[in-house]
Image (cartoon, rainbow, N blue to C red; front, side):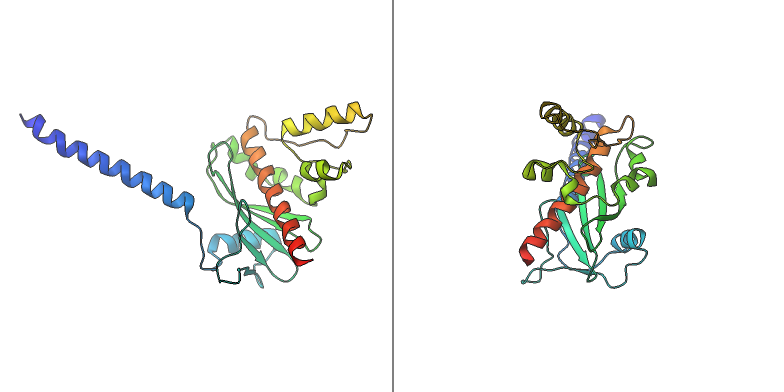
Length: 215
């Protein structure tokens, strides 16, 4: 009898806890900041990439909302450098919250990881400076997307393993060099490594879109 009395309240309590957890997760996954305020995480990211966050402002649309692009949560600009806030999937969905900073020429100046939800000791190794430094200097024309659009072989191509293998086959068929098709992924952390590549490519693609809009 006693067990039956406490069973219903206990079930209801568990349902409430699970529902609240799902609501919080859904909110965090879909929330987009439209205030234009540069958060402490963004400030720290800008400082890591550029040495300082001074002079940066969050770009907005004409209606006052934060400017976004596909995969880009916000864009920060200081008159010369452009930084893109991006959340990308690694091994975990939305496991990589990064800031990709580009210089005035459109080349990657640096990548700062603001939040990471990857497997500790494995996927979290993408935080290593040696891994992130690989992206420095990369421009849009060095990406697989640009390769396919222009049909020109760039000096260094960044892509997923499947993309790189496809380009290697194309290079062999066309008797062109494929020596530049490299991507040093973290051993055992392919998803996290590709997630970082995706974040960088997303930033470079958004930058090209911004340039096109200004022309």
